Length: 337
Image (cartoon, rainbow, N blue to C red):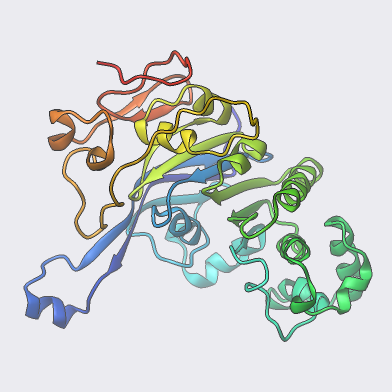
């Protein structure tokens, strides 16, 4: 069995909600919120994993913890066999050359004062490799993402959303990384442009053997490009497994609800929408037991008091639910009794 390129084990991330003096004055013994609560996953070379969940579920926090942009409270993030959480900022820096992160806003994440040439060659200057032919590198990177060299002279405001996203991909590829973390890579793009960007990702992955972590709430993106997917709720994984298996046989009610709300391209399809009731609970006031029980159609008394354990549904499919959905998929799954 090959060693995963990225391995995240029991990762926990906490954020302070108030200063120590204010917490003392208010009698708050633990002035923190748990944004990520013990998640574990891995990604191998040439593989794509999708992180899915509602806004605020902790998806982007995981990405930032991997990149060392926020500290991990506990757990480990191993890249190519090295635990990154144990490294000082100086020792961490070289690993950032092998990891690239693409942020959500395709235009807003690009400095408006820099030309495309400067934007996509900036990583060479940041990492001390700016002595190479930057004009040649700009042409190479633009060609890789399907843009002609005339784009090198443009500024971000002169780009469409799809072109700006391609520039972001080019910038991410500058240092030939082994892992790309893409936060909502199709956000704000027309459906046709989304398809072009996803096809670009697939082509580059085939050519370069990239490992890709995609963070999104767009399930069509997940199904189109990912090998495996993980469903997040309030900072925890509630289900994880091969993409097609999770789509075809979801075991957690939250997964079922997300999938049922996914737009169906077939106008003749009979849809069985499952509404998720209520608001997402506050991280400062987590529900007891199964944290999804306040919004779950199938919740029973046990769900309100006991947190469900991780259950294996196959070699690489797992979930956390006391009353999982049955495997048979006949238009709509049912909760097992």
